[in-house]
Image (cartoon, rainbow, N blue to C red; front, side, top):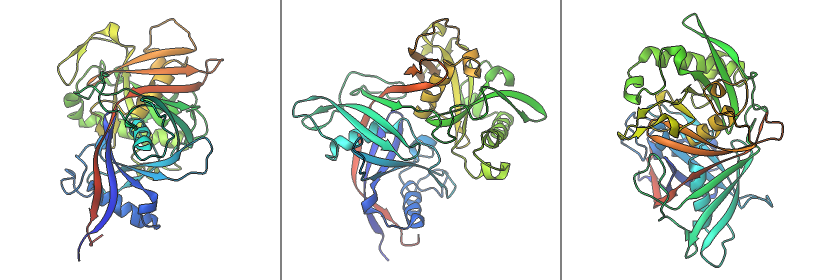
Length: 380
């Protein structure tokens, strides 16, 4: 039998890449949809050689675009994280990087109202994963999302047109509260207690102090990835944290959802060298962070994690706040996060009492890479 063809588009957004499908082009069956997603990425092979994935969590992603009746949003969408060497399709979390690409998609597909002249276009979309509105400022040229520009973001070699993403009232999208287990809680790995902060902002994250594991936080991904004991400890804490936050009833149930909560090591600023060999000075950043996604250390840092970490860092009593030395207590701040391949800057607006987040924003670039058909083998 010949393969079945499904229309799709491929975008890069930030440091992630995803395959975009329209809901109207997909079968009604959820199971059939998931088979298409896994085939598109090749969830079955760790190398993902038989699909469009690249064997990394930030390139094994799918976006499904939905029509919406919302008067505030021009489209709605759902994000899916697809397994790598595992037949998994997970919509429990979301992707902060691909939000920029969703904005570009809305322009390119004629779903957003585009001004007649070149300039900026405000796009509002609804993210079904977190049930939040996302406002995206997309530069346009000749009626399409602009690609060329002078904005350089860490993790991307070439400059591009800056796209500004802002998520409104981002706290509690999954658990109903920004801190589902108080500001701090204690979890246990190898009979050792670790103090953690579980924060649900855009995507739920567990933050732990790198120094509690004998690390200074500036270690490279190559070094961290070879430390199997560390990986095992962090996964133990991750699944315990899911139960503590009420995201899973049992440890076994938590293991079945590998995408969230994610877990990250944080540390106070210090000098370090990026993956690309560029030196980052301590005075250039507010915190150092390394995160795990789908069992592997992330090449940079997930966009959703940047939103979460920057917000949590500003709130007194959290683990990230311990690493923050600034005495400023402004309602609107720009936070600089040092990740393995550079520096990311996140704008955070706190509520008036300083105990929660009103909005969180991030500048990204995006590019439409491919438009065509994804072929699905008949054996699926």
